[in-house]
Length: 382
Picture (cartoon, rainbow, N blue to C red):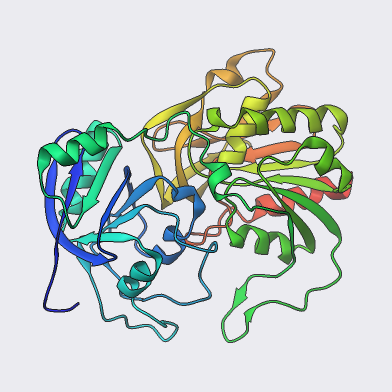
């Protein structure tokens, strides 16, 4: 970084104040402060629409080493509200790097702060829960910062998905990246057509589907059941996204209508899509104390007892009592081994299943790739 560092401050709504140094854009930003336990993958994290409304803290101490490249974007822009790191590295060492992280954040108008004791901050959030925070390079007055935070609406009950969803439907059929080749363009003729409801979809999800010869028609979050069924899809995919599923009752209604009108169509949901699917069938969701954000979360597949290491990013979860009701149409399939929260479910009679985590990784391990294969199997059976 330049020798002329500019001061910045991080303030939390509980009165915690931490001084640091600015990188990226100057200014002020507010969001729910969360922590991510991955060692790398900050470019994919920043461009994941699921982080809309949140300021991301990286627990790994050195960030910026690998720079930024044009291929690893998970969406069209940075969606995180701000970025908190222990030590920012302004001299990337990576053969794929095109610009520095700070330059990229500056171009995107995203405020970053370095020099923060992220170990303290992470432990504080774990103890007290995630909470609104503000990063500022212009206002260092505690009372003023706290007043701004108290006026912030938070993320509970809000429909953030409609803010990150596509404006109009589009088609996607491009495979995953390969070293020296880039993204696979010349794919075989697709076997299936899937309508993907975009609540904040990551591009690597679509690429994983394309690898399995699935042509995707991506539609906005508020697309009606009639419009979706008019596409005559072989399957329906419910994407990840930001915020509280309780704010998307319109999407739950759409999913319920689809399952009633065409119970033969396989449905696969992940992350927010998983939560909306559960709510469509009568489940309740709840806000977690500090959420799950990272690339190393252990999840057990209850049918095989196999443990997967998963990539996760969510602040809400499906309540477990939904599966304890003998009248429930779903059964619990996956469980988080850190806190015993719900990580997956499937319908007892219909070709419908979902998981809370991100099988597309990016960043993260590929233990859960088999879920896309299961989706293909359901469409084959149909």
